[in-house]
Amino acid sequence: MSSLLSRILGAKGVATPGDADRNPGARVRVLMVCMGNICRSPTAEAVLRHRLEQAGLADQVLVDSAGTHAYHVGCPPDDRSQEAGRRRGYSMEGLRARKVAPLDFERFDLLLAMDWDNLALLEERCPEDQRRKLRRLAEFIPNGHALAGAAVVPDPYYGGRDGFEHVLDLIEAASDGLLAHLRTRLELPDKP
Image (tube, rainbow, N blue to C red):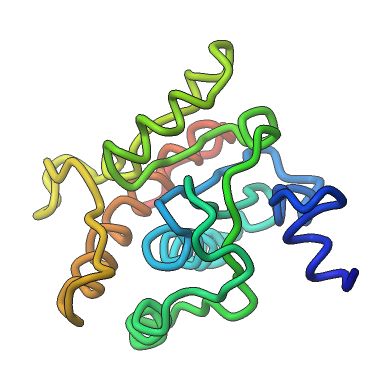
């Protein structure tokens, strides 16, 4: 089995945590979760990684993404997501869809669902002692932001270009709040 295929499928043909061991020195691990892991969650992964690099925190926070369903395992992000991200300077190159694995609940400190349905699916699968790690990404949109109060990052898959742009707007806003939250978890001073 090729190394990429074995990473995607694992020894028993089951999706395994893709990047959980990529940054062993990470102090905080964040998993972005949507349904198929080709639109919203890889976009969120790319945006947060970019923000962490800009903040000099990429070595302290690991970011990965996964889906609650295995519809697209091994596929790159949707072309429309990649195009929208590229226009704003985010790269999704090398990202491949995978399904949330049981080990993810142990390995990650935050599992951030894009909407209520995916949060409910995570809650069904999550061991009781790990439930405190489950949240929605939209919770991190700062109060006072024009998009504050948005409950979810909606699925743009069946819509047009505007839907992918709106997803990016929401994810960028939430990433700002999430970055502040991560600074607190890392016990770092907040930056303006």
